[in-house]
Length: 181
Image (tube, helix red, strand yellow):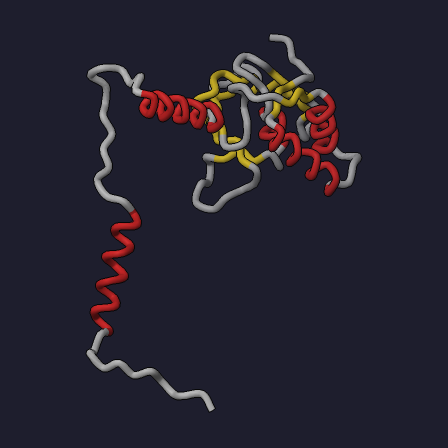
């Protein structure tokens, strides 16, 4: 599969890469990958790998690995995240299914990362939720489909909790406190 030097990034992801480039001294392998990614980027909104995307990818001809492309390391998600501060994470950012990017390895060779599947993409999921919400509001929800109903509202729960706390402190004595001098 041929490798490409162009990718599609959201404006948010592109801005993050620009900030990373400004903060990082040049001359190393990571900086070279970062520069290639920024110079070949097309900023748009599609179902490519963006930050917080769960992606299945292959390194060379190895088995598919699934990771979440993230801005940085997070605690508690060891082995699940692939931060863009890692050359592999940076290489995958902005690629669509079937696209590849070759990057240098620490031993001087090259490895090719290929996006096998975009498993979950947050922007696409948000658009789908908005679309479904719009259909529910406009009355075009399909017959026999799931029906949403309000079980409770958070403001009702808050009001009940405040009233309960106030009742616990109500002694019946209304002391205005010390008077000002």
